[in-house]
View 1 (cartoon, one colour):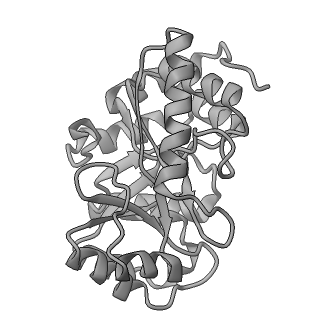
View 2 (cartoon, helix red, strand yellow):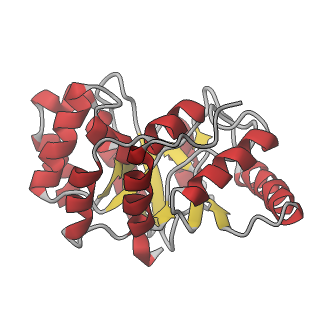
Length: 248
């Protein structure tokens, strides 16, 4: 099991800036249903650490990626109830909800065609991702259908689609059709590499980010959050007033 906390000075800086966020909208804390927490003990440990970092509300978002993680609302809500009961047993007082991170593929297209209800992080907001490896086909068609059914697409970690480095106009197109953007907090520290870090700064400069999230999966992400080395840059983003986590 990972260490719950280091005692570095960096930790105090991290806690200060994350307390200003308050609500995390992107994580993988439900036990054993994707590449996040492996079991309920790990879920609890991660949540305790998130609380110490200053988060007061968690909206956890397991993958719905049909080739790998065949999660459904019933599966997700069952795991959420299990986790909530465990937190109650241990007198851990934090507000926790569950939505999903939808991989926009044929499965999601099918859900929309059948008018099946999607899990949302707030009202009609749906956390959405697509391939990190190559440009997606038919993405705008799926996004359009989501919008036609009253959903607000929230694009997870747009700075991590590195193939868009040479096609930054695509970001403008996504904003023009009404998508919200969610920054992975660790991107600013270089955790995902220099290219993702530079794309994050580009999108900040453009004023494109609406939300932030940890995308916490496991202990290695927690370690990086605890020793967060981009607190100043991240606080400047929060100071713009464009980040809407506090509304959730």
